[in-house]
Structure formats: structure tokens, C-alpha cells
Image (cartoon, rainbow, N blue to C red; front, side, top):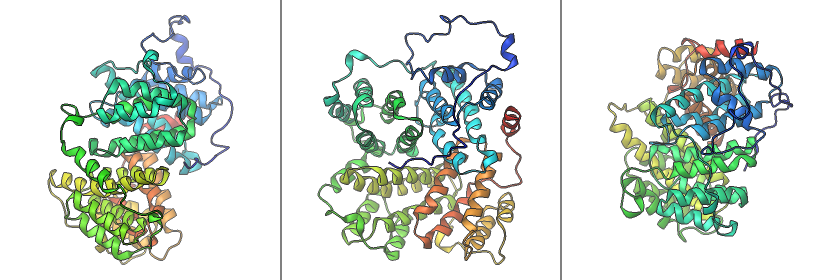
Length: 500
């Protein structure tokens, strides 16, 4: 897996932690009173106190307390780890892997945004995510009072059997067995083997509009930053999330969300010779994929993808068509479903690039192809869909600056996309200018997890597309980014005050 950039000045050293004055008015808490109950999972002892701070500080005071500690030397990486683990321990990924669970799903996206953002604004995404966690924590407590319990040590399989136990549990949708196997794997298996195991089950079904695949990618990417020693609660939460389903056990029925994965697992068996990923780029194949995404059913997209690969077409040309199709869905109906087509493609593409097993890599690509028509059909079920096409997006006549693009976005998404395309064409610095401006506006005006998840995904995937598709893809992303005329998030003022 790739390693996150090392920002020495950003991820500063030594933690400290004097309390804010408002805590002096609270009653003292004896050490025994502050201990976790026996029914709650314990975390790495070095990070536990900071996690407890996030869990126990009231929402209206937590940013100020964290800000005080940051000013006294709390490292960014420690806060990132504590935030992620607080979400893991306190936010249940049920009844769906979404909604309140975005407090966990968004953490790595906030981190990516922070790393790439303006120097003076880098703390804003993480402070926003801290406040977001407090809201999800409260919602979980209201709904169910759920907190992650310790693993049952008596049920953990031996290390040598853990991979097979995990696979068997996931195939039979057995939560208790999967939880024990995930804990054993976290203590013994190499990271690359872990990723292959979880990526297989993250892509197998089309439930929760892609959030399972998104969680796999973001969980492992976050662990890359905060450290493998925190893996056990993360992998247990992930296994629990991947086993979310409706109705009776999916292993005992033919449910629609499971059909693409079952078909594609059969398709990839002995389907391609070694070196299939080294095919030749084909603009015609990209157009074929994009055209098929507009009307073909999911099974036909998988078959088309496999046929193109068998003809020696580069997988990158297929991915170009899929990403372009996702951008087009966003143009046709800007909203939650369309944006998840892109965040899901981002997660599946990351897994495709990262896994070691060749058949699994094929499966991930075929699943990505199958999912796009399913997202398209979901759009159709939600109401009016325009006939906009990404390959017909026309550049505006004038050559605006990035600021003018985002000013127009506050009034007219289509006009902003055309201005963005004009700004990008023939301008080597245009993409950097648009991405920097767009990311900063998310920092200042973002109010929802999807603002961070979406912007982090499309700004990363821009560089993965072939040059002939990059500008159109980035211009299409304007349909969900923030315009400059909207109000700043109230948390911006609180964060700046907390760090001043």
C-alpha cells in the first residue's frame, strides 16, 4: 500500500494536555470512576486517554478543549488516531453503513483534505470531524446505547486458522464467528493479506450504496497513518459492517444486491491470461464503456469489460469510461446517489490498485463496472434525471479565473462546469488552481460528511484518469462542490477561536 506523505511541520512531536479553565468548575473524578466498564473494548493504552477526552467532553466544549491541547503540542497524528478510534468504539455501523456512521467513514477523507489543503487551514477538517463525531455519538446513544464490546478471547481461532475462519464466517454471514476471526487476524496476519481478505467482501454486494467498499478503503488507509497497532477494533468494526444485510441470511437466498458479485466471481475464473493489466490504451473502448453505462444492465457491463480486457485493452481505458460515467450521473442528477457512484468508484479503484491477488483485482474491476448501472437505476427511481452528457460538455467562451468559477457555482452548476472546462483547457496550472480553491471552500463552507468524502475522492481520481478525460471529469465535479457565495460553517469560527 502507498504511504501517506510525511508532513514534519504538520505532524509535530510530543503530546501535552493542560485543561481549559472551564474544567476547573467540574467535580473531580477519582481514578476508579474513570475506568472503562468491563463491557467496553479497550484501546491502545497510549491513545486511550485522548479517546476518552473526545468521548466524554460535551459537544459544545470539545473543540475548545482539543484546541487548547493542540496549542500545547498535541500531535496531529494522535488526534487523528483518537478521533477514528472514538468513532469505532462509539458509533454502530447499523442499521446501514452510512448515515451516523459517516463519523467514521469521513475521517480519512478529512485527513486527505487536510494534507493537501492550505497551510493555515489544515486543522479545519479534523476539527469539523471531531464535532461530527459528537453528533453521531449522541445519535447512537439515543438509538441503542451501543458501544463496541471486547472480543471473546475464548472464541478466537489460532493464527494459522484465522484466514480460513474469517472467509468461512463471511461466506455464511456469521457475525460472531467473523468477529473472533477478525480479532485473531489483526494480531497475526500481514497487512497485505488482511487487505485482500477485507477487500473481497467489501465489494461483493451492492448494499448501502457503496459504503462497504468505501469503509474498507478508508479503514486501511487510515491505519496506514495512525499505525497497525490500532488494527484490532478497526477490523472488528469493519467485519461487522460488511455483514450488514436486510432480511434473512443472504447465503440462503438469491438477493438482488448479491447477484453481481456471484456472477462476476464466476466470470473471472480462468478468464484472463497473466499480464492482462498491461493492455493498450483505447479511446474507442472508453467511449464504448461510457455509452453502455447509459443504458446497459449491470451484467452486460461486466461482460463488456471482460471482453475488452480479453481483446488486449488497457484496464485504464475501462476505468476512464466508468469514472466519466460517474461524473455524468452527477451532472444528470446532483445528489446523494450520484455522488456515491464516484466515492464508490474511488474506493474500488484504490482496492484494485492495492490488492495482491490477481483474480481479486479482476473481480474489483468487474464489480465497479456492474455498480455504475445500478447507481444509474437508483437515480431513475428518485425522480427527474436530465439528459446531460459529459462528452458534450462545452467550454464557456470566456477564460475565467478559478475564483470566477466558484462564484458562478453559487448561482448555476451547469454554467460553473462550462467555465471550469474553459479555465482548464490549455492551462497547465488550471487544475491545481481549481482543486486548491475547491478544497478551501469545502474547509470553510462544508457542513456534511459528503462534502469531504466527495471532494477528497474526485480530487484524487482526477490524476488517475487519462489526460483526455481529466478536464471533463473535474468540471463535472463542480455539480457537488461548494460555491463561494454560501455562508461559512459556524465551526470555522469556533475552530479558529480554539486555536488562537
